Amino acid sequence: MHDLSIDAPLLLMTSDGSLCDVDTACRLPVRLLESGPAGGALLAAHISESLALPRVLSLDIGGTTAKLCFIDDGRPHMSRSLEVARLYRFKPGSGIPLRIPVVELCEIGAGGGSIARVDALGRVQVGPASAGSAPGPACYGLGGERATLTDAHMSAGRLDPAYFANGTLSLDANAARRAIETDIGAPLNVETDAAAYAVAELADEAMACAAREHAIELGKSVAGRTLIAFGGSAPLHAARLAEKLGIDHVVIPTAAGVGSAYGFLLAPVAFDAVRSRFEPLAQLDTGAVNALLETLEAEAAAIVERVAPRETCSIEATASMRYRGQGHELQVTLPSARLDADAVAKLRERFEAVYLARFGRLVPRAPVETLGWSVRVSAPQREALTAAPVSQPVESAAPPEEKAETTRLVLDQSRRERLSARFFRRDALANGAAIDGPAVIVDRETTVVVPPDFDARIDADGHLRLDRRIVRN
Picture 1 (cartoon, helix red, strand yellow):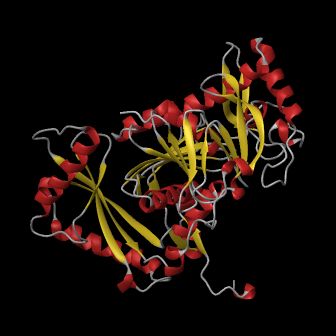
Picture 2 (cartoon, one colour):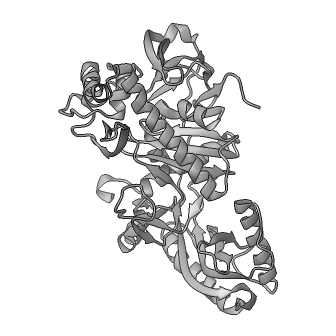
Picture 3 (cartoon, helix red, strand yellow):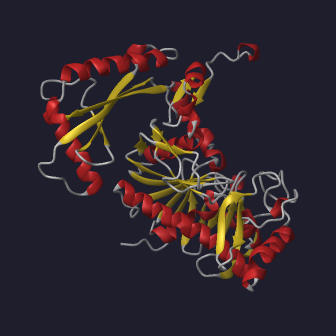
């Protein structure tokens, strides 16, 4: 770093949405397993706060996977467990459980490079196998021959073949159609449009089902949320997924294609120190627990102090609690970093509030037990990052009709027919520009589909907002 004349520490992203130094990462590499997706969740959380959106569902789709995260009041849902090395990819319960702090994500195999096929029962399948970036989808022209989700979008007319990846890659529309016809159309004896529709619809429905199931697992609801979509492929699917989930508002952030990277810049330097300690709440030894909390605080602070003075850091303590006999615990935030004389009553009250919010009911007279304790020490965000705008506002807006590159027939996913849609370049649309669907907005790293029932506008922060024309009551 010094050789490059960079006067800043080298920091790495961890799975819980915080930053740590290189020494900590080398000592605890397991903490970095889900660092990329965690960055995307941080971006969505930042946008939810800046736009005053209290209930958000984030959608992050890259080349291989789609990742969903529930965000409430500007905070991603967190977990203390992560499953890795699954025998059956994306199948919960088939891997090795790890006990580390992570952003809670629902992940399925539906990315731009996910390979589509027809199985022995005549069913269309998408993923989890992926064509990757090399050779990639057939339309890349790099040697790939298998049909992928990107090829389905290309066949449906949703991609601009001359301006993909900021114009660095020219897509082969004929190769995409051949792959879809060969792998999907011919086995099903259907036309290319029907085959492309089937591939995209299956991926969208898989995401919708995953979102609904994940919401039930977390005791949350999808209804009334705003969908924040980022990653190279998410804006292609965002509006259709919103239709399936009954969501009326979608936000596509500025530079959505590199959303996770932006999230890294918003992450605080922080560390969670965790210890297991099983104990019935009624028999809680507050003195022993306070000694443990002091040890955990010192452990976490020793890491964060390498970047920021301890006196400037914030401290948050958490207890893992459950009713006796249950197999899963809930994270309960303590009112302060130490327990006082009324700790048992306060912890029970806080646990019941969290439990009621999660499951909608309590278990009367059931004994409560604690399983572990954690302390998170966070350094204040650096002022330069906090103040840095995520967007690059354009000074004046021009009528969108003057910026339309062309009008093309695009396969609409909800109506299953080709509609005339205007194509726009995102960098030619100024803040305040409004576009009626159907339309396609081509950005440098991604493409946004605006269905007929949605309208799009560029807000004051440069984010693209999609709103259902008739909002549901």
